[in-house]
Amino acid sequence: MSLELHGVSAGYGVGPVLHDITLTVAPGEILTLIGANGAGKSSLAKTISGLLSPLGGEIVWDGSRIDQLPTAERLRRGIAHVPEGRQLFADMNVAENLAMGATVCAHGRPAPGVLDECLRLFPVLATRMGDIAGNFSGGQQQMLAIARGLMSSPRLVILDEPSLGLAPKLVAEIFDLIKILRDRGISILLAEQNARAALAIADRGAVIENGRITLAGPAAELLHSPEIAERYLGVGVAAASDPAESARMAARLRACVWDNAQA
Image 1 (cartoon, rainbow, N blue to C red):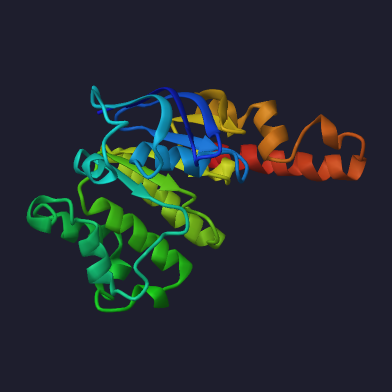
Image 2: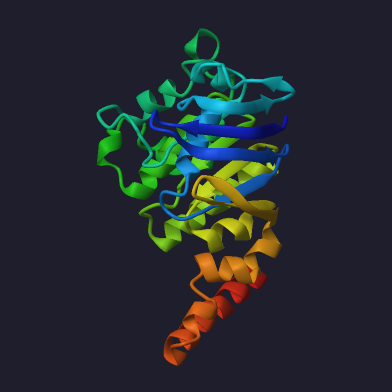
């Protein structure tokens, strides 16, 4: 199943914040959407999942338009959205939060084996099913949010800033999990400010700036692009006037290239 956006615009009532977005997420790939805070990543995620109504254009999923469908119907058709900030039911326990992810399934229950598979992916949750979600660490909450999103057996998962506020070790664990989901045939739209880590695991990438897609291509090419380095890794001609700053930023770029080569 592929997702296609054709000339999509969207906004919050005072004018569009997304402009003429054309984008494709192919079956079984990770597409990383990178951009600064406020560039439009979350608005695009909400538009695809139905939380924000488009002002124009078409959203096509598995050959059918879905841009006028409610969020619940898009979820039934296989599109799950794990929003920025996790948005768990903080006063509910783990089991209850997971159950909420399956409410659109037949009889309000996940398909056979889905819960067991989620707990295999996130073993920390299996031992804490009765614990209150609001008492979890940020990393544990993110794992629970992703697991909740998987309870409806989606074919596309939209992950909005999954690394936000997490320690580097936990970021690595979350990104390893994203690769596992891709390897199982689930398409991933990954919206991230952490450009280096996100592009390192992606098949393709796209840059969003001021609500417009300004650059797109294979993730490896974007990761080594001077434009991306200057805008999102802090390396470029603007730093050249300060030799010390230039040296520091060049070291960051070398580290980025080295880390990617080791991945």
